[in-house]
Length: 274
Length: 143
Image 1 (tube, rainbow over the protein chains, first blue to last red):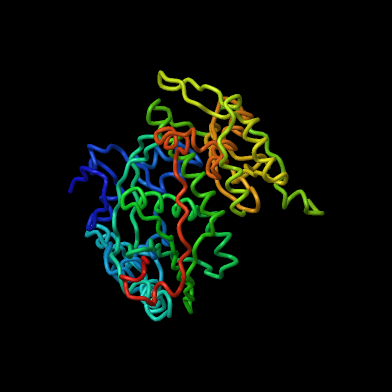
Image 2: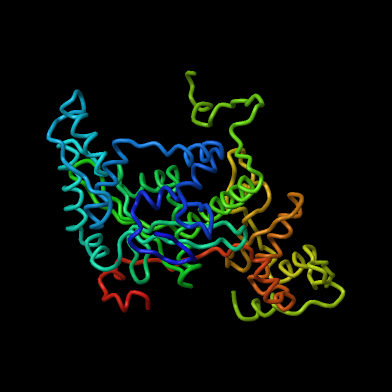
């Protein structure tokens, strides 16, 4: 499949979307919100991960499986009927599953994913949110200020709402408010909102459905206020400008060759006993 | 903000306050930072601005060192603006002019093209979602 012009494309396989290789030759190498977050920390890291692939983790696998089950589309996953990942009883079937394009999950993780899906489906608000709409819509557009091609994969696109599904350690609103900033969800929200607006002319609210990974899998629904979203826009703008500059110059800076002076963070400075 | 204040902000400037800005082979009319500040003071002596984000050093955060997002508050109403320039002072002045334009200050001098250029990237301010949105049929959700 080839993306030839800006638009919202259903049905692009997840691995093809993330690889971003030759998918949109006429639009060029595109920047996603995930890529922007890595780029803002280190352009060199972004460049490396683009060439060699990003990191994977157990948490990532569980999140991907939960997305597949809740959204009804995505990478398949299989249950490996063991309690831990020690020895051949895990590695052999796990490698076979990976070779077939499936995510291998331990018995407990597989069961947790199903409980998470049940929690979302039966939550009075989250269940309603996923009753209407389309899953995994890939959006491609060109940022007018920089000429950079952008991409975003919207978990769930309703008429009037952009919905992002998150599996989380803690969905309590006070904690999620902080974690969302640390994980750059506000940057994603800004990016997705800008993209859908560029493509449809509609400025839609960005809603996050968070489901906890630990039992009893509480579900909470969140949205950023204008101030939070504005910071996301500012950070995304910074990333777009940085991306354009790095791409143009071919230079993807790392941490530099100077000596960095480390000052005590505020929490440490307040500590009485060092 | 009442109608009188809104009209005062939008009132056309005297020619002596309008300068010429060379851009793209032409001369664009513009109102400088000082005249913009004077207009804001005349309507709301307590107007203020603040950066949208701060860096780890506690100072206003610039976008890749080149631009500044701000929030401008006039008569209790806050709107965003973006400014860039070669120096910090230029960025601040440009951001205030840009945000003030969103209140109508010197808006008549901004042509459509200049408006798009000066606005730069548009901040998408989405309407707030409500739980009730999802209890409605799809056709009503957008209204």
